[in-house]
Length: 424
Image 1 (cartoon, rainbow, N blue to C red):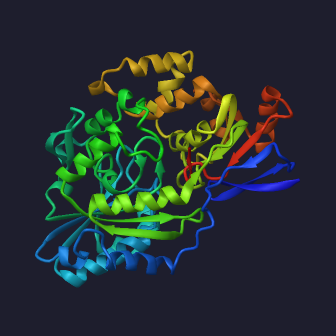
Image 2 (cartoon, one colour):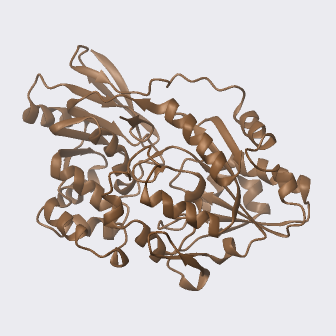
Image 3 (spheres, one colour):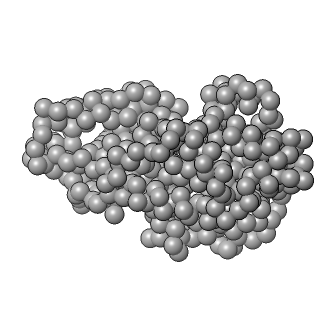
């Protein structure tokens, strides 16, 4: 017997399995990457060597109103390292600049004071103005034109009216935008609700190009690039983190060029070949990415990419913040089957896309093909079942359920970090 440790909330669950040829671990081929320097040294080096851009200390000269878009509480961006170093560069070039941090909540709830403190640290919270983006406040938005897809582009006025717009974030595989980071700080980060919903419409979500690790011909990515350009996002600091949420790589500079270099690094770092399994076990990498079911769909897509037809997927996610929204819940629970829900999604016009339909659609895509068993908070068991998911309180129980369907000799594939791998 050997143990595989799977991230779960802020701890780990032990998965006891008998070793053998039918139990395989799917991890990135380069997962043992060793960074050169401390986290702070890595970020400083990136800021000192910007890609296709003057240094930040030069860009800020003559700029009075500077806005930094920063990821919210659902993203494990080490902003307590990034933001102070960005502020240091800003003060070096323009000590009198007025700096605002605009929290890129996208369609999520506002980040709480406690979460802001944990994210940025006491000094930043005390000394810098921090504002939560609220996507539903139309009065806070400015119109910037028509997206390549045909939707209206509305972006937070704080970003649009800045003399210089910056962003900090991180790059990881993203299940329909290809990769996170870069242009994503603007759309969906600080865009209006209606803009996000149009960009995340069912036609785009079902596109074969809107997949993990793919940017080419990706219609969602195309809109995002347009939004970042129109908002004049001038400079980004994007980091790459390991399973311990530690910075191992960083890029800074031009919004597109720096991001592409970071994506290339991530692709090489986390690429993995499929290991087809009858039972596939995945996670969302632990807290904060596994804090609700909505986010956990991302880790499920890694399992989807390596599951055999008719496989059972076991998803390990703490879901300390619940499901992730009532709209998300009802978009599955209110239908007799996942297929019935999918039929509704696909018949919905782009301009009528409701909140969270994109996440529900991807989850439905998997539920139509596979049985999905959640290992999560027992308080959510009934609601999971309402949404056509199965539930098990422990990994052992989930495996027993899965083997009852696929047999004791089923081939098992384990993905310790479903959001940290590109399977293909």
